[in-house]
Amino acid sequence: MLRYLLTVMALVLALPALGKDIPNSPHTTENLTKIILGHWVEWCMEFDKELNEGVELEGYSFEANLDENIYQIQLTPEGKMGTVLIANFSCTNSRSLCGSGGCNQYIMADGKIFERHGHRPYSITNQKQNFIILPSSGGLCSWSNGEGLGGASTCNQIAVWDDDYSSFISMDNQLPLSELSPE
Image 1 (cartoon, rainbow, N blue to C red):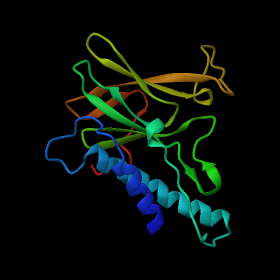
Image 2: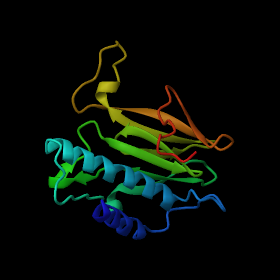
Image 3: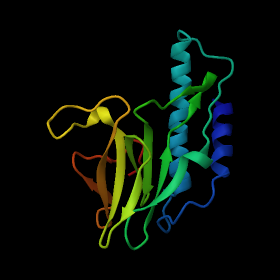
Image 4: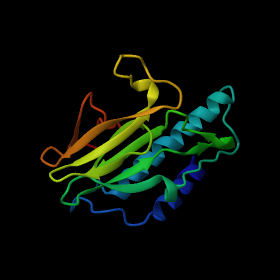
């Protein structure tokens, strides 16, 4: 466990400055990132133990290439940014946490963590609001005639940021507050 935590700490300390945090808040993007990485380190340890028929391994590994899996998106036309963390991590023996349907994803904003599963979100600026595009696996969507999509097809959901409530608005709560969020 200590080896995992040291690896995670080294990864987080290497993070670049990732946007503006709430002044005087303990819930900085760096701290929220540590919470997410700590969760996945523990998950990988349990997963590895389960695959090893309940026996703990002598050595664990956890890979999190943050250079490729953390980025910012614009949440509002005024320039408010959110930080996206894609959980494209690997456990021992390169067991990836992602599949054809995408990865777990986290968007951090206003000291909160929002979570979903799918492909990389991005934003499109409109005159009065930004649309957060949430690509998903085709299995979650259907054609106009009601038939479901399948395979590698993708479709998109949309969310917008509400500054007054520090939350996303979307159909069917596409970006719920994560259980990992401190608030």
